[in-house]
Image (tube, rainbow, N blue to C red; front, side, top):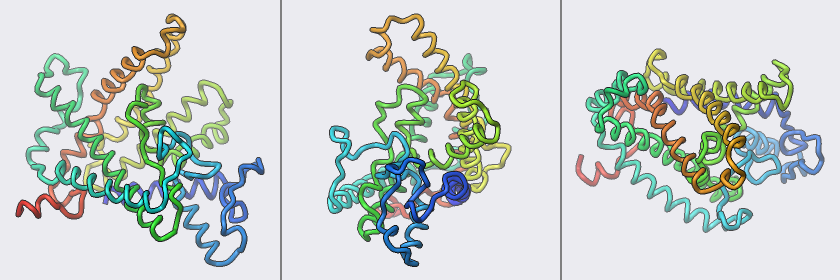
Length: 346
């Protein structure tokens, strides 16, 4: 239910992006760019048959990342980091994706199938969400639990999204509905996440980036008419982008049974703007005071990883705890079938 509600909002944003803002057109095989060299070439452009137009419609409705096209979203992960242009064969992609689906499914099964809903309501109680005002009360046990639960929350989301990419990818590639190039990995390396901007803009999946960023840019630049390239326009786009994301995730929370007064999505996603501001201020000051030789070293990256970890340690419970406390056992099971429960006879 929660995924369906979130997807309803994202479907609206997809229509807003492709139909209203970027004017996708059958004749161009995509958005109508000003530069001729950026026009996409697709087989359905050759003949305007019913099936070709239908194929283009499906393509427009589902092209979230536009992978392998001149207008793909930035920072998509390559199939091979050593050779970014490499695309595996159809058979190799299907084999690797199928193995990944089995492994990821079993890991998720182990992580989610034996949760005790009553215990989770206690562990993820609302009073444990704030951190800064209760630092003096924070025990080592709670700090470890907060770290573990925050990590587990993101790991589960990471693994679920891999399934959401790989299962449709296998079907589409096997049936010829799309090429392998459409299904580049959803995530980049975790080592890319040494700033908050890189966490969200490079490491994390980019499947909603175009859908939430296009309306945000349109509102900031065409509706509010903020001067392009200015600090004001830059932060307006950031605020609007995370606002779009807030609506997406809050809709999913409410659909899953979390009261609107308890959903932590607005707190979590909108507070990322504050994180970006703090990060930008620190980086500006660092560039002014640090010698050039110290600006891009292993030390600065390690500091960046610590910063991102500390930030997520603080703010992840805003979002994760209400979601986890709302778990009702099998009614909220992420997976449709538990292999481990079947094997163990439960």
